[in-house]
Length: 424
Image 1 (cartoon, helix red, strand yellow):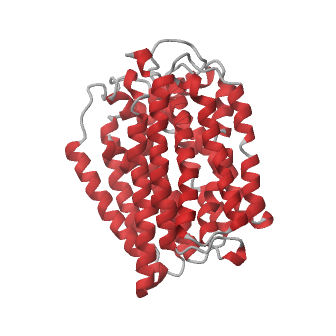
Image 2 (cartoon, helix red, strand yellow; image 1 turned 60 degrees about the vertical axis):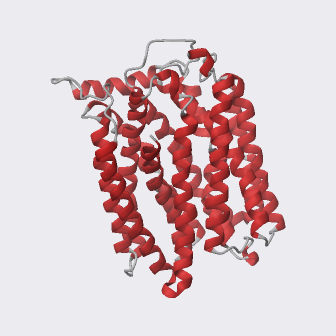
């Protein structure tokens, strides 16, 4: 599981974070960066359209391994496209391919997770799974961003630095895929559907079952709005750190961003995720949802303080980012457990019920709605920041957390869902 979720996290970090830093290093503007990279969320938004296909055709293990080799090839494609004069157009095309492969890999990996672990331990292991995912973030937006900056300073320039980074990534990902081909376990429940199954009818039934569940409007509102503020904040944090003081930024180098945001910040986020999983396992989602939400959203004030103060010390910036990221990791765990609850068929708040036979596809539908909630606000975030400036933009990001509290107030949470002592 740790290596599987590391491999799931890495291409997502590449598409959503490394692409932002790379384009900023290569002189692309904030509004264009936010618009183009937010558009890359689309495969995660529409992946429910082919989620049932992954659920109904073949084994999840085979999907995982095949897609990991495809992602490795796409990473190599970015390295080959960067030196050319049309790097923006070509790299975006490859990032789109990588995003579709990564989104499909997520469906297979999440389905594999639910097949390989019994339901009574899935919520408790959310923290472990999140840790592996966050380690991919540290390796990506921490170590690789630092490496790209270091190589650029060695004389090759930003483009040469990023070519080397993506070539290294491609080789590493192919090795991970080869390792999983040999080592990934084969759960008994991971089997293809019986021959003669009506794929078209089953495909439609999966969607119908998801949207027929009671309280679907409340569920969709929460999934869309929980990360409304973060979707806007996320696209501008790296440009904010890299922009000079005169432009309202912090004036950090690429290596400094790799340390502060990619290593220290993600490490704190990982610790927060582990603690959040433990808290939910002890108290249940119903009792912890609101405290976790507050811990996730209130630390956004850190960026307001950084924008007004513009401190020069890397240590102070790293400490502020660590505080914000710890709160985010702590609170985001509630969202992951809520999606597991919905996928299990208990999104209406019922105490118990029959096991959902389409958990993989329904979890993919949940993550697709989540991605839509990230894509749309992120697309206008760059334009909004250029219009407002960094200070007013971060104040707006704090106000933008309010819709998520309204959506949470309407939810019905299954009693003691996620509480391990209740289900063992």
